[in-house]
Image 1 (cartoon, rainbow, N blue to C red):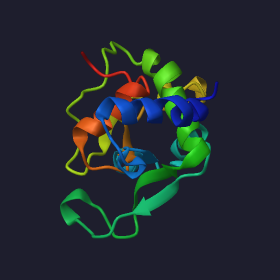
Image 2: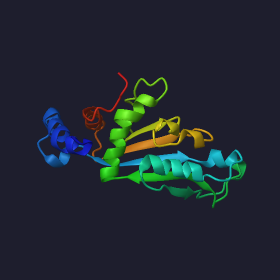
Image 3: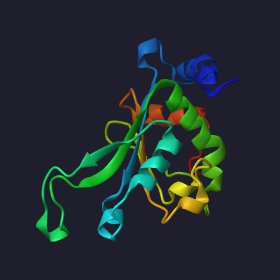
Length: 179
């Protein structure tokens, strides 16, 4: 059974029953997953071409990332308005479920000294945010082409602002939290 089918047919009805929710519109649902990769330190260290990081993020996400430029110039950091600062990808629907399945089943076990993701990383809107230290843990990234492993921030946006309900949703999806 696919991850998305399992989510719709088993996880959501079980979650509705466990949380005692009467209205289907009050069930927390996955909205999108946003992947961010900070490339400013990569460019600042002397590398001018960030196309390898862009290609790696495209392989991880399954779609091309958007390059975000600096909005303000900061002279102390030698940062100008037009300079690229980070790469961003927003995943929705099928790609979101494919990425989440890959993250839960394959990728999280490849993290060095992994004991689970923190349960305290929910923000005030109920979204779950966490960092991965090396983007090379994803199996799509060609290991021989990597110059330096880079950090990735992953945000799981959930359509409900109750942290406990959102945590219950991720636990029902077998997200690897710390005990």
